[in-house]
Length: 366
Image: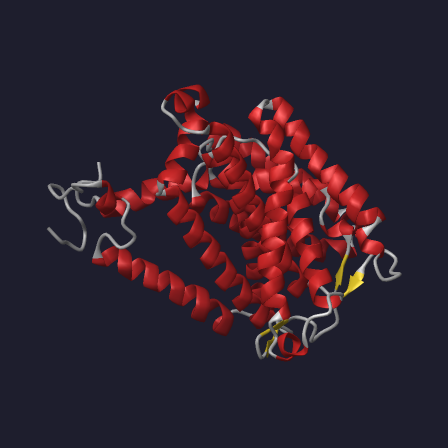
């Protein structure tokens, strides 16, 4: 029985219906409205400053999706995800600036799109390399191996060797007009936003489809009880490494996107704190939910922007406050995590689930 509201008495008879994208006309309307706001409302009507903020929300969400996959769905704790984002950023940069592409690829603006795919694959393989210990260890020990990825990749390989390619000091210059997507030059806040929106949408669609497939069910089974999953015939090592590859691929794409939003690329863009920040985003948004990665990103980025706007007027009276804003930001980040762990341990996604069910089940919302 088809209905707008899917009222009491209607139920799904098979797994395909239960996991369907467009279960009711009301859900279709909500998704169309969301896409309209994302691709039309924000870029056309929001001030340029807030378009930049929205772009940062999207970039954070792109990085957080991989962390969500590892922590929320596969039960693999990571504290070195910024390293894989950095691999993607530097791979894309080197392919755009240094690789001798055939003339027709350069003329048609295909170098950057190709570099995004290559960056994702290379970052995924690099992530698998540091995910190999997950076959033998987990928990605290896996945290240490992923932290090693951060220090080996960013602090050693990228800082000491890769960033000096071409006789440079520490940064690769990316002047306007460098990043081209076909005939379009990505050289304004709105164009950067549109690129982010398209990439984030594709990543969400890919992850959502993986999670409702056999692969996603295997990840959840490993997260809940890896011994029971292996007893049921799931190749635990294979699926763990696959999770690291997919998470690394997402990180690589996020890094490749980031070079379109910066004039110069430096290892300083990928500190270890950025890995910790992405884990905090997942805790605040809600572990085990794609919504959680997006809600957590929006919450953290917007709160920090509002905090900075509040600090600026006080700079006339307390100049040191603006100089020390980085410490204020870190303190607010820590307080936010503590507050959510105490008062909303399931994150913003759980609250969204409650609100959504209230309206979907109305008038029987009790």
